[in-house]
Length: 385
Image (cartoon, rainbow, N blue to C red; front, side, top):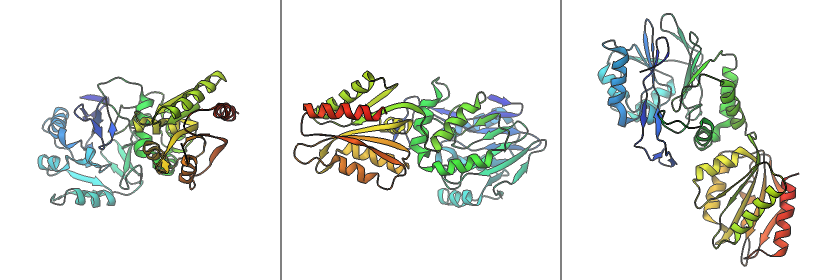
């Protein structure tokens, strides 16, 4: 097993069988379900793994502990990819004390109504648990991204066990750049709860954190400021990258031509980065990620049954649901007889904070005409101001 520090071990598993995480997010490089052991005078295990890997996880425990029995199983998060093996664990280690907060045990009873637990310890925010030479401090983090979530700080080795925070898609036996899949994971799963993540930052501000151990993704040991800064930007709905994102839908190619013409104009005029996506063909989670990455976006879509084209409607709903804010939005609409897309888009963002629409709206009637090309040129100029 991977030794993180002296007497701290990684005992998680990699999942390359999974095609959709949470039934919706494509995971081409699989998923990791992380679990950890802290071995001191008393032994604590942090979280279990997905139901399909219970046997492998129990083997990992045996590999580290041999015939020893853990004293505590700390449940930081009750989502089944981290809690599914609690029953198997207690069957093997019936004398272990299960540690969680009050909401943890409410959920545990809901997920496992037939599971009888003889040893439990309910902890509150800021409470400590001594393992002997080291002391663990529990940090509740409600709605990051479930109500029962808590995290654990080991002051001896300065390790922050961060539950789903600082996690990413992808198994640990695949090398890939962290930020892209961490960003897609964050905005897909945690993005709505930026205010709660910011509250967590305030709670942990005075902790000396030198290692972050999340429940998904790699253990973070170097350049922690990079990861913390990105999470702070994401959770405060700040702008990560200078540039413009164009998201479009097109039925017969005319709206696509307009979106691509805008892209070309922006590049010609010196825009540092222009990203573009066909929402009918792009992974929607990737498009959501890019929508939050940049400070300015353009939504280009046809009118369809008096509404936005369905994929654009889905995309805008995904942004609004995740508290999209602090952005500038340009619109290109197309309608052969009654263009309604711009009106529908603006209505969707009515309750969103700090959304600015460009003065220029490109309104196409079926196919691009000279006046539309002029509008696109004006929109490019306005976006680049």
